[in-house]
Length: 419
Image 1 (tube, rainbow, N blue to C red):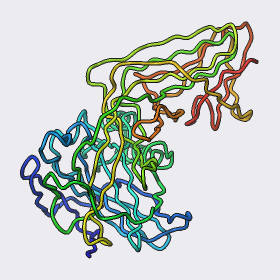
Image 2 (image 1 turned 180 degrees about the horizontal axis):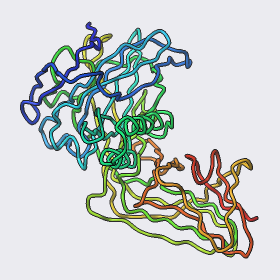
Image 3 (image 1 turned 120 degrees about the vertical axis):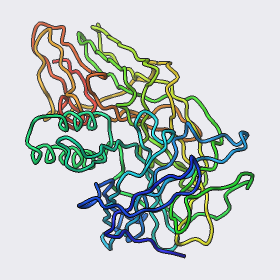
Image 4 (image 1 turned 60 degrees about the vertical axis):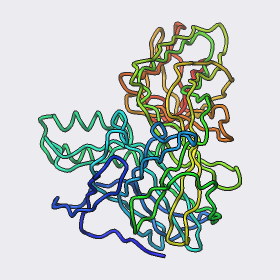
């Protein structure tokens, strides 16, 4: 049993070897560390629950060996630990440690949280983040959750604007990400305690050292292909639909974890970038009648076995996750999604005009095929390399309608209405 508390001293982590132990060193950086994650812990009834929340960098699935490879997985790298108060609220702040290249493919850093309550109740959460160090007009480092926000922050860093205004704008980016709830969970719900047995002890298990609360990868138990929807199309007669998808780094894919006995729940998201430069552009329509279809991509998914340490358990316990690790390049059209219209979110498109989603806005789409028993969604963030639009081919204005928000500005699915 042990308890690690977040102290006022900032801690940086220096990796001594590719997968060996980590040493701790005191940092002299002024001011508080940048905010990594904020939220609240609740019990199974949704009531606030105090507990311990630990964040660590975990290796991406692509570098975790399969069981038959007979080698140890890279160790997780601790970041920060903090107590959630009686109201369940927590805020994790951390400086970026020295991170080996294999832990940050295409600039993505994969973070996992382990939340623990009394009696061994627990939960995990995941997110892929970008770290921008201080420099230029960026007076302090920042963690951001998606590629569009990181690109905007880079633009602000090199802009000629006053530093105070730049930092205020970057702070707003972070607040919008946390408030949006599209990628990292803000509410961490605890589940029942788990048994301590972690399956066959055929490989050495490496952790960063004691005291440590968190999870380390054992191996990939299997890989399967599965589909994820990146756009739900629901358009009336004489509309056409445009989708340009050339950068998978603007997509956050749901990660599942095994909560109990083969039951899976969403634990957050993971992202990867399309380093091969693959993509596609699709124009559908105009349609002679209403048209509904889901546009899907095929992803390779990994099922990973983790072992976790907690202050409530005398030994480690198993956790399994399922997450996409790369795009195969295949695309599919199937399904007939129904996107409901909320009248207060109607916006007019003039005749022979294309309406576009605003850059930086996300939508979360319907679940794809079940992989290892888990069905996940895709949160697609639009930027210059992913565009989504609807053209009105009739000779009078007609409405686009958001399901839950403004069709241009909100995080919502969109339907093109008859008008």
